Image 1 (cartoon, protein in one colour):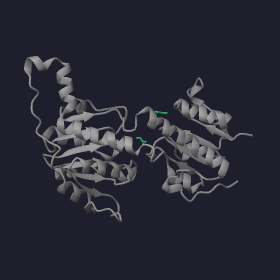
Image 2: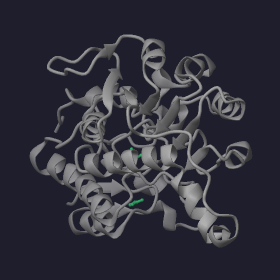
Image 3: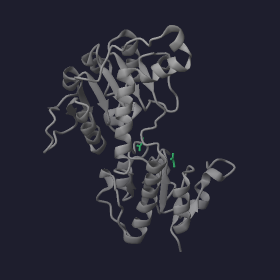
Image 4: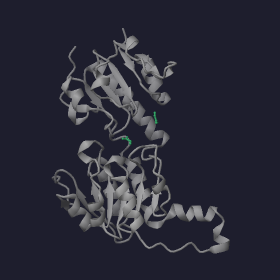
Length: 322
Ligand code: GLV
Ligand code: GLV
């Protein structure tokens, strides 16, 4: 019989159709209770297809036969991957297919922030050009900036090569210096923030990176500083950032991610020197379809060959028991 897969929340058709063609699919979100009581009918579930759902030890307890969690998204801070690994459960994510899209969004957001393009556009649409024109000159330019990348993985490197094409110098910080990477490395985040005038956050979420960007780091970045966050909102202490933007501790920020999405603090909304995007880093039809296909392909590959295509580091050593 076909393996049973459970999808806690609705996902795009490419995932839905791909899974229904190969598996017995449970869709608890269609139930009257919105999927609260998923345990009874789904005890035999062997795979999960997940978009944002928090998968912790208590959630795993509901599925004694679970073998694999296939996550939609490259970030998987919603999943306790260590708990999965300890139970011999594979976790997969969707790297690579979104790298170029997210890097494009990151550079777009950087330019919007430096050149105040969204404010200029709002100003034009509000009818100001003929009356009050011209739009005030921006204090910052992209030229001659030094970009400090926090998290030089696949996406960070794609951002770095784009930044170099714009003439920026690139530095980076991460847990380790990388062999074969010639960009100057900073062992501490504070050292990076003191050296560069632009910080690009591409770090994953989770406890290790929570509030890495705090008042001290923002002070080190300084009054011409620009902060861009395309990774996870939890990396930034949002209250400290609001403070730094209000007081001129840094010049501006561009954010695609927030601490409590989709909640964006009113104080942030009110700041003219913040550019705010609704987590659109990978949000094109072609990229979201490629991510969805990879969610399906990881499950198909696992049940057909016993191997996942894109396992996450914490579960890379997990092998299929049966
Ligand atoms: C889910 O399938 C999405 O594209 O958000
Ligand atoms: C999106 O935020 C992702 O992690 O893919």
